[in-house]
Figure 1: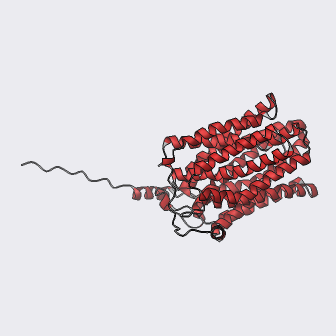
Figure 2: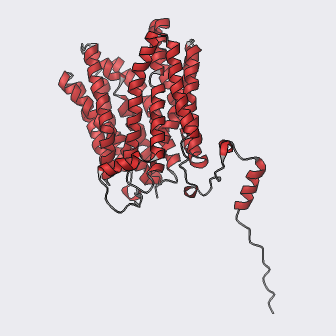
Length: 438
């Protein structure tokens, strides 16, 4: 059973890991621009990093599944990320920078499933939903604080100082990882006795109805989501000029704050009411956001609309590992399943930016937003009417019984709730009178 010390250490591991990962992304573009790199060179390097992450998803998931030492996998990944940050800043030439991006891509694909596997081993399936909610809260807080801190450091010193800070922040991440006690991590007992080949592992997942449906939901979600903010930012830059940077920063920070606020509640909701309700909430926010971005032009309205992105991010951030745990129950394919979902999201995100840019150029930005909203609506329809519910009531004895039809999406009437509470209450033993002594 997980102790408070291990639970708290996992919280801070998520916080500092998010700090470390924030150092890559937009800060890479800023640093390489200050080193007189051209846009073509920067685009090439970023494309190599993205391709590396997509190709490494499945092998990294299989690697984390195969090793019983999940903490060691996370330690090696963190050390590799620190090395990639130092390689970037010390020698900012083509070959070392490409090597840095490749190393960071592979390490990130190992680190994410390793943390999810540690979470599952600490709390088990019965507490995984709430645990993932805590992970998401600390990760979103870490990302927001690190973005502000690294932006200030890069502006006050020089752009390369961001990567020195990234390497330094790996140290508290390793301290938090070491504080997780291995004795509290209880790996799940597998039902499968015969060893399976990698081909049979893939076949078992690709023939699972839930895996295929949710993989399609992930692809459609990122197809609709990835290009929304860049597309809105393009129009915002044309209308407001230099002030667009501050507004875009607010559009990034606000969803992080929303995600930090609601993630624990989302995790508890998934544990008590089922996965489908949370999935519908997260996927349903995407088409609403796309339709609102078609008509909202004021900067304050754009920031308010972006709050819906925090709802989607909280729901999907919890649902991806939680559904992977549900769909691989009793097997050793948890991280491989997560990797397949991540690959689906990567493919959708890659198509999204290209498709939205083409539609905005050839037709209009409004039509591009409408197309992205349609992709999100298709994901919502799949989750609502096709995706099976994966929560098992025996994992949460206090959860209400599942209802059929559309009634499962609404709470029980008050009279029925009281009746269920009365029937599940323990009977109070009657008072007995001691016999009189003779």
